[in-house]
Length: 236
Ligand code: J9Q
Picture 1: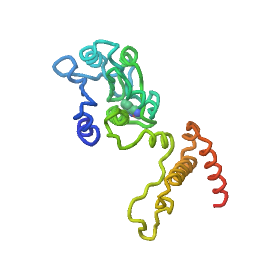
Picture 2: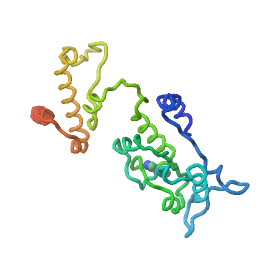
Picture 3: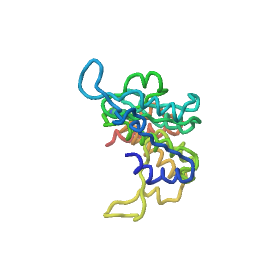
Picture 4: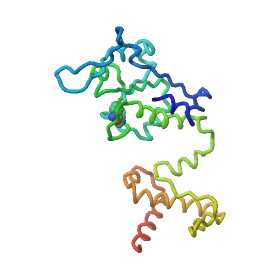
């Protein structure tokens, strides 16, 4: 499940450049006995299966025996909800980040209790397993590591938009099926273009994600633009 995505796109380049290293370890390869059993029925009864603890303890004990050289994160709907702040924190992590992916209905509680440092959810929906959640985290974190994206986006541009929804983008042609590109973008006046973009970003964020605006640090001109937006919306 994991390799096709890791071998495409940005992540493949990061791995080739030596910036990212991903090891994939299947609990079944660490299971005991001829039949390599990784799951069993739950104590106390009930439906579904529970992943046995031993394969997880063996993987960690074999590959990361030193506790201070690993950060074990379990993907779980019970975890704190992943966001860009957590992605930034993980992009600066010096230890190996181990993403524990469960399958079936559950993992034996003792894995979480004794091995896991952190539990992360990628959102409030049910997945079949943690693998897709792990890929989401790998993707979001990797693109924050210096050297992965090249330097196409400046630090200045990044801080301009970070935390707001993006402004509208246009490319050629100048007019398409009667739909025109906003004149300000053709003006060559970069101060005016920047202000227009910021105002568009503020307007869309106010309309669709007012929760994001609460976290965003507004400059005096941002506040002025929000007042203008509110004033303008009275007339429509
Ligand atoms: C492991 N539903 O769901 C949302 N974020 C993570 C998950 C998840 C799941 C089942 C297993 C992770």
